[in-house]
Length: 581
Image (cartoon, rainbow, N blue to C red; front, side, top):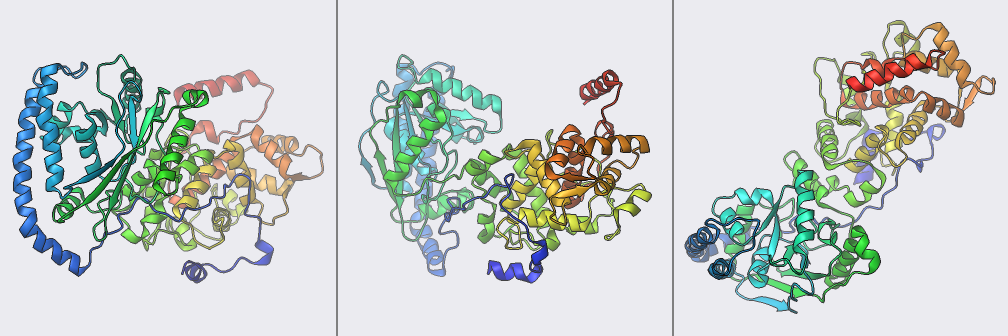
């Protein structure tokens, strides 16, 4: 189906236009066939919906009444436990005694949700052996059971602390909260983990879910390094849910928490299995390398569970959260980029990726999760400069580069020069599309879009050099791997319309080292690196052309920075401009 769609909107590449897609700056990915971020029983059949109605009346309503009663009971003791208590100190003996009714209340709540019996294999070891426990994360129910069973301090997201009643109960059980959006909060939690993992520390042992988000049990995704920074022994915990008709998982694409809780509460019986593995004693190398330690524990847990250890990460789930409001559920897999792989080749954070995603969403008119060529160039074709759409990030998370695109599709560079206009042409955007389309299907998924545009922004594994190579491949329309002096002159006049004849002659003289009248790829690349604003501006024209941006130029970038005799004044100019920025 994918190949049929590709043929419908883009003609095959002519033999004379074919080029090698395996560029050094453009990474090749092996896509995983598993999607751990979608509930497998998202859409229920008629029979299951009928069962929910019947059991909702017979079981759901009585259970709900009892749950509310137990919740009030737990809240009463939570107020008693936290009354006048400083959270930075361990609980006193009488406060710990008052915690027991809350723990029992947790188990009763699970019983009312249909988890009548939970099968447990192995036993948790003491804090003096393994001060930290790590577990895979499926849904909100296993943390409840593990809290009851281990009496550990669980690490939760800060949003949960603001939930009425529930937040007070969590504080009474000494749950730790982290704001995942705050770097300061994350650093503070790592410091706290280091302190509490000491055997002499009087706080209870810690329970952490290093995946950082829920999955559907089909894989173990990338672990965060936090619980492994202290280099202390950890005890892995495996969680399994056995089901046939009702998936209890709560990943990014799933029913709402209220809907999921209703579904689970209307089941006669739900099955959960907990397995405590033997403590994992880190090697000397793992103690000083948290990433290695985390990955080895992850591989062990995946092997025991019989599922793959993939490169998916919490950031993939965050991207799916961002996309699911605009796209149908069946296309959510298109927005999984396998963040662990992407971060190895791109210097990008999740906030920047979300900005690229918003640009992708605006371009994808038919909401199928892929961009045809017509969708890819739609903003360029329709751009009337009536609006500004600041979507894409650059090195400083904002574009500060000129976009002066011609409204005429076939305007050549000489006409653009005459009218004082500059920009990319559609044939160049076609070349960009072909370079990003690494598999040759004739359409772009979000991972290709994200990778290609990030590299153009100088954030690939080769940095600015990768962006320059990309730009050179776009400019080299004939595939000759070389440029004549006339072609270089046209390019310089396109990018710098106000360039004087003297400056242009000086630049061309510098570029043509061998005085042959032709620049090979390496010569052009060296020339571009000496004057990095040349291809930087061109690369950003491409980015802005795709997204339809029209932002004002920045003087320090559009000014031709040639080597002149007055080098001191040149350096002073740049230093003052850098300070102003």
